[in-house]
Each structure stands twice: as structure tokens, then as C-alpha cells.
Length: 443
Image (cartoon, rainbow, N blue to C red):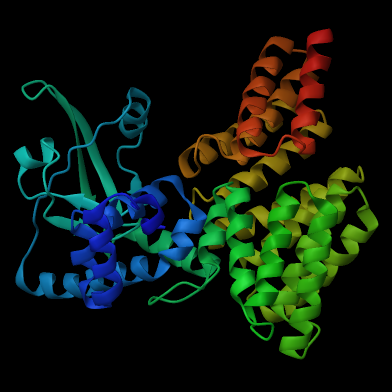
């Protein structure tokens, strides 16, 4: 890809030939910080989340991360705390978000280049200190320096003793897979899907699937993950094809019919049938999953909570609000025991409990649960994430039922803006909220 982009640049062509001839993992940082097309292309791929480029350059990302880890071990033996600087142009909107995030954790989706010299940093000069991809900092404060006429944000690099960092890392490690040394091959796709970047996740899983051997266990997980993404995009028949293929492969590879992987596929199949409004089939698959998770996992486990929550949703759609509340409350208690306090699964559970209270015409309770959920989504997710749209839609429903049509319309329109950004045009959620807006306007 470098060759294609710099075909008419003799200097870069020579650099690329040198890279092909001389590169080895112990010089990855040197190559990254060198003034060449490699630095520019990798940074662009990380910034734009270009799946093809990231996939092609994954070896370099891994080598840089490992070399930075090795260099850090040497550094901490010789030096204590150091202060570094970085100049960065940001929009007013981004600055306002930073100001609202004081005390929170912040992470960067690139290799963060900084300088030991403040003047050089403000001039965007050559950097001297490099932080690894995904480094997590505590945003201590954001203040305007009148003398310098610029905003200053003070960040502290988190270490393994930071309690919030521990909770986040342990949960992410369990969710994404892999141990301390490396995450699984499919981790990037999982993270993209979790961010609501469904097309990019699907692109990544498809790319991985094309490169795997038929007897690789990751093939089964690839189909499983593709099923999850297709379900999230409303492509329910495609999702069922992928998930049933995953079940078949897991049974073949694992020589069993009741493993946790198979149970997790049953969970997603149950969710798909719920969206297809085939409630009895949905309950059948979700109860299969519940039997597996309760037999093989600790008494309080996030996967069991997921299943309890979905069973609650089925009962809700069947009109059995008392059973729905029972399952949702069990799920919520379990989530709060095993997840970080701002985790999106807790906010999702709050949303669904709010739906039940709305159905019971208990409007104040419904708004309380939905507003709790919205505040948690805002803390833990990007502003255009589909789950934020779901909270807006839920609050709009309560106001519509209360006949406060002005506020209902306000929330439904916020929901539509986000859904148009994050979902394909044919997704049923876009059509449904558009129909709701027309209905409210006609009243």
C-alpha cells in the first residue's frame, strides 16, 4: 500500500525498499518515528479505523507495542516520574467534552507522541517520548492558561494500582479474550462492534475468515461474531445462518453439545428470534443457554445475567410484566455484582426495566430508570452510539404516553439523528422511529 501511494516519490520508494530488506521487530519504534510514509500511513489507518490497512500492518502494531513494553521495563528501573507535553489542535466541542470529563479515564487510539520540552510540543516539533496504543490516563483537570492563551489538560498515566483501571482492564480482558501478553485474533472486531462500528467489524471478521484454515477453531468464532454483528444490524436471517454454522462447528471441534461457546450461540439465536417476534422459539433457545451457563459458571456471572435479561425481554413482549420484572431485577442485581459501575450492560438493563414500568403505566419510575440509563451511556459510550439513541427513544415513549408531545418529539428526533449515523439505511430501527415521529406530529 505504501508503494501504491508513493509510486512517484523516489525518496519514499527507496525507504520502502529499505524497509522490506532490513526491517526486524527490534527496530519497529525506529521505523515508526522515522520521517517516512510508514508513520503517516499507520497513523491515518488508526485515526480512520481503516480495517484493510490495520489488518495489513498488524505485525508492525504488535512489534511497536512489544518494544515499547520492553523499553518501559528498562525505563522504570532508571527513572521516576517525568513530565511530558503534547500540542494538539482540538475543536470547541471536543474541549467541552474534556472539561466535562475531569476525573475520568481517557484512552488514545494511536501511539501517542510527546515531547520533554513544552516549547517544542507547542510547535508540534519532533517528539521524544512515545506511549503505546491504547494507553489509559486519568484526566486530572482542564484549565485555560491566560498567559499562554491556550487550554491545558493535565493527564496522569494510570498504573496497575489504579482501582478503576483494574476494574476496566479485568472486564475488558474477559470480554475481549486473551491474556496479559496478547488478545485474540478477533479482538479488534469485537471492539469495533462494541463501539457500534458494525460495518467495520463485519469487514474485519470477513477478512480474518478468508485467511483461516478450515480446521482452525477461530473459524467457528468468526461465524459466531459475524452472526452477532448481522443481528445487531437487523439482518436476522443472515445472522441465523452464521450462528447455526457456528454451533455446528463448535460441536465438531469441541466434541460436545453443551459447551459455553454453544450456549452463547443459543443466546444470540434466542435474541434473533425475539426480534423476529417468534417468542416461543426465543424462549426455547434462551432457556437452553441458561441451563448451560448455570451449570458451568459461578452463581453470579455476567453471561447468566445477559440470558436472564433477554428472558425478561421475551416475557415483556408477551405481555407478562410481572415475570419480566422478576427476570430484569435478577439480571440487574447480578450485573451490579460483577461489572464496573458505569458499564453499558447495567444501563441497558435499566432501560429494559424502564420499558416494563412504562407498560405498567408507572411513568415516574419509567423515567427514573431511563434517565439513569442515559447518564451511564453518556459516560461510557461515544455520543453517536446506538445505545444512546435507544435511551432517547425510550424517554420519548414515556413522554408520548404522558401526552407531552413536544418533549416526546424532541427525544425521538435525537434518536433518529444517531440511528442514521450508526445503522444502515434499511435497518428497521430507522423506519420505526421515523414512523413514530410522523405519528407524534399528526397528533
